[in-house]
Amino acid sequence: MSPRRARRMDPSLGKGGRPVRPAEDALRGSERLESAPDGDWKVRQVSGAASDKLYRCPGCEHQIRPGLPHVVSWPAWQGGESERRHWHTACWHKRIDRGPGRSRY
Image 1: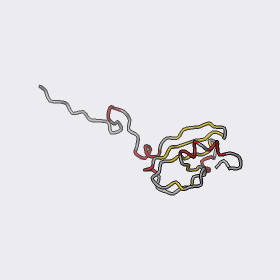
Image 2: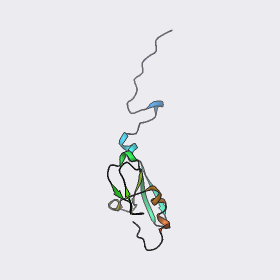
Image 3: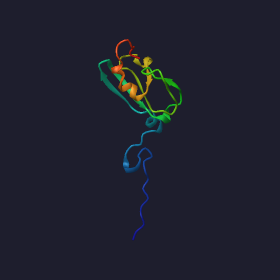
Image 4: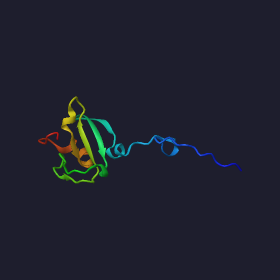
């Protein structure tokens, strides 16, 4: 029996030859575009490990504590990044049902 040949692995590839995402990208999540009756939104899921600050949810006015997974959203128009808000995931999904008299965020 002949000895195995050692193969050098590409450091950018993980198990099975698939590309590895940087850890900070995995924690931050990827953004997607959502269309709803209240407009088009860019939305990003944030894992609990990536959040280290205290935020106030515009849906329920309660705090989003550090370490809690949540949603970050902002309008999809040019310059909408300045209106970025952090939401509880359930509050984000129920924002359309909030009724009249409540602002968008």
